[in-house]
Length: 307
Image (cartoon, rainbow, N blue to C red):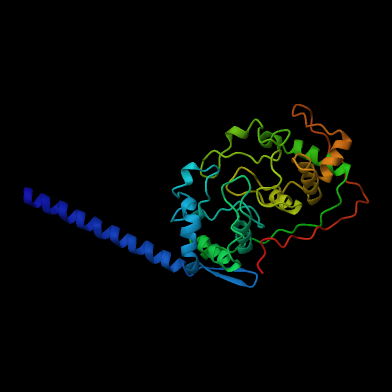
């Protein structure tokens, strides 16, 4: 009887071992299949299989060998590295919840992420960066079944003036941006210490008071884009459904007044004697923009664009 019992256990262990081996083979097969993933940025075609060495050298320490954001350095980092298996990205030109474009990921690799440990990898060649984009994509099957979202349209930037800055401040109060970012943009609002990301980990709001750039860029249009796309994976939502394009520009201009460097917006705010909002006061009605304010377009920077 004892011999039969032992034989049963041995058989069970053997079956489990075979199942585990089979599962590992399937996983390996799936990964090898995904290494055929491509990225298309301008005239460049990135190949995941060509980025394996660079990923291990530059990325795996934070994002992990499996792309799950659990690299050996991750425990020390705040905010935490992105989990590529979820295919959820902060910096996008596409609507909230949709996949970014390959160019979005390419720009993030080159630019890095402000207020994080994600540096700029601009020293890498354009081709190497495109290959890394393809490698990032190979971690999630979403890229097999979904297409990138449609790129949002950014209208021409209007001329900044006092009325727009006052309207932007009114919107900052109305939307209760101060609850996270603080009345002076110092990331110390009453909700700041309660925020969590999509994996239920603590996350801090962006500090405008101490930063000259934004999370996903440095130009006015980059901040406009954040309002309209949101930062997926974070508490920062998209305002595309309840903020008009003109209002979004007003908010951009007001947030510029909170930053530490000298700007035209900050100079106008100084001339106005603009004070921080009072959260306990009723939100003022947004002032209309000057009727004859001529739009002025700002040329897009060629930085981070493939050559």
